[in-house]
Amino acid sequence: MTEKTLAKNVRYLAYAIHAAAIPVGIWIGIQLYEWMSGTEVSFGFR
Amino acid sequence: MPPGTLTRKSILTFLGLAMSCAALTTLFLSMRAVMEIGGACGSGGAVVYRRACPEGTGGLMMFSIFGGLIFLGVYAFSTYALNLVAFAWPALFISLGYNFFDYGINPPNDDGAVVGWLICGVLFFLMGGVPLAFAIWALANRKDSKLARAVTTKSLDASRLRQPLRRGTVKPRRSGGVATTTATATTDAPPGTHSWSVIDALERLSAMHERGELDDGEYEAAKDQVLADEEQS
Image 1 (cartoon, chains in turn green, purple):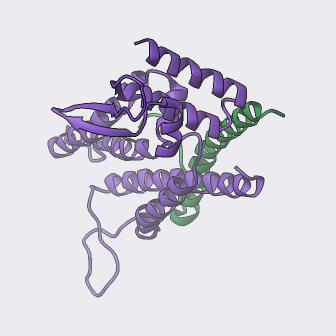
Image 2: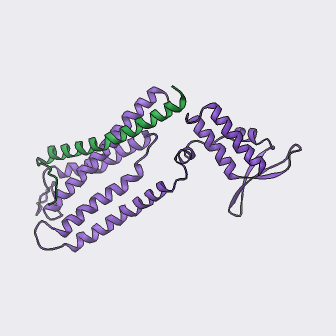
Image 3: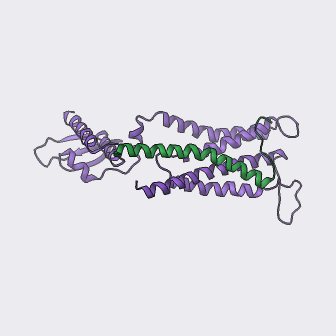
């Protein structure tokens, strides 16, 4: 694998980590809130 | 980047960003829970409060603020190739501003719009929206993504600059607000003035080479091209 390809793969890995971390983080936040508050989060307009 | 470092940075990046998003989510939801009961509450201590806080919101707020800052720091120091730290501020203020607008327009007690919350909403949207617009504008006006990234990497040292220019000692000098570099002639080379753009280009090429975006051949060819252009001008 050339250095150029390796650098590109590292960049793609970084993008994938970011793309995965954001929804996972939001899901963790919702689970944490539901667990701590004893309520259920619903989606949609009030 | 060695494989061990890459693995460590990847894990910390994921952990830092995910937990920062979790903190922001809990803050958003906790704020909504407090606004649902009128926007103010209290709990703890020897005082009897008129409105107790919803269950768990005290702890969640503490986690959101301090945990969020700590995890954002972890993310900022470990991320590579992409950095979203600048978007944390707009995300915080725009999401909380949305809550102010939502409950300001449609408050829980159905008494009509709450002007105070709407003013807070406008302020929060401005505080988040202006930096966001600036960040997007800056991102859209980058000349070249690879070059822009390379600028942020470490600079080329002076010894490497002297070698390709072949005109004696290079002395960067700034005068009258315009940056110039004078090549002092120590040989029979004619005296001339190099613009910073040549040095910038060499620095960027060197950084790209160090990052592995250019192999040795491409780097040497690009460097020769830059120097040849400079000689002609």
